[in-house]
Amino acid sequence: WKVGNFFYTKHWKFCTVTDITFHGGVNDIGGNKFLVESKDTKIFMDFGMSFTQEGQFFSQFLGPRTSNSLNDMFELGILPKIKGLYRRDYAKHMDFDGTEDTEIDAVLLTHAHVDHCAYIPYLRPDIPIYCSEESKLIMQNFDETGSDQYLTLKERFQIHEGKKGAMMRSSGDRVKIPRRIELFESNKKFSIDSIDVEPLPVDHSIPGVHAFILHTADGSIGNTADLRLHGRRKDDTEKFVQRCAESDLDVLLCEGTRVDAPPSITEYDVETKITNIVNDTKNLAICGYPVRDLDRLLSFYIAAKNTNRDLVIDMKQAYLLKLFHDSTNLRGKYPAPTDDNIKIYIQRGKWGLIDKDIGKFTEKIFLEDYGTWQKEFLDYSNRVDYRDIAKNQNQYIFYCSDFRLQDLIDIKPAEGSSYVRSLTEPFNDEMIIKEKQIKNWFVHFGVINREDNWHQVHVSGHGDGEQIKHVVENTNSKKLIPIHTVEDSYHKKWHSNVHSVNQHDRISL
Image (tube, rainbow, N blue to C red; front, side):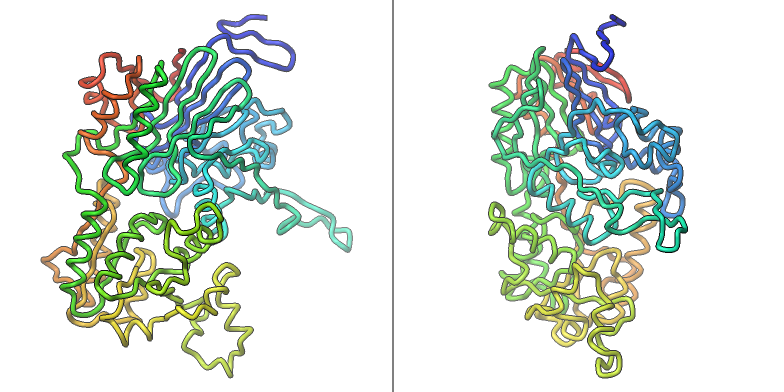
């Protein structure tokens, strides 16, 4: 039977036109969730978190309840209320069915930044996630160095009968379910039922980012993902723009995070500026940058080599470099964790036994101080701890995360040390307060004065106004929809057919 534009049978729903529903990522920076429906195929492009929406209701100590998370997120409009989309253990426990078949054929992931992927752990494991190998390894890094569930789901609310007949909560291997991860190759077309997909690499601040062109029965859809033209892979972005022009796009979903920003310096300029600052630093050069931005790590690594220093990274970064180095396809793109100019910082563990008497505590107890993924690095010849850094401060560029500032207490930076902050500047009240707190640490240790700021050397992962204008004008799409932005007036200046949408709006080709 027919209802509107849809034909229903007992088991299947066939769409007579190709639709895109915007469940996130519009009038907002991030939170991308675009549902494409064509014939009998339904694909989400990204399934990410909106910092804006989450920030309206949740904070560090106030989040969705474990026992009712789906309903909490539905009530606040953070997740779309779609049956068959979410993991069965959650859906059943929260009275959102959970027994039904899914109509979602796949999730196409542009990249592994949380505003594009953070809600994947809510999804059913039998819905395949199509992504690049780089994105898969970054999600693996999230899972294995933390408690995320991107690649392996751990069911909740499961029980089993114990040895004595009592009912017990199930955990561990009993509840592990691997997700279905499908890796695609750059520039190599593949099909998901009736939709043909072209994954095209673009330049961004994390490895493995891909824009998409979807070819459907009713026309072609482009999605820029997050892109720029001032990084190490700007040629990839140019090739994507060219391919869009060749594809006669019916609609382009075009990002505009920094559409009103002036021209940017390049990643190579960042590398040069860091080198100059470190050359002028008498003692310890301290740095902060996004932990999984391997292009920025590479900039500090090159600066370290140029100044005859070693780059000291934390174990999470070392583990990510190890995953990339262990990949046949990706080995050599970034330094190996055993590289001559890399040192791996062994932080204090749970008991802080790194400088204690192992004769008293035993090697076994010492190893219990660290997680499974960390233990390997304890045997690396290029490992260092706070004592090595403190004694030889002029030999290192020391990576210090905003979440590990306590390490400065052990290292005690000497007079003549410096700090290079290579992260985005604060753009809301919470970030401003956090930055003031971080500054207190460096003032306390005399690295900077209260009246001075640290060295801010950063470029965004998003294109500036001139770059987005170049993308808009040269992709030659018939229609353009601004995404990942709160500003659409610039797109409208550069394109004659801009269609602005709101959350949950649906448009047809």
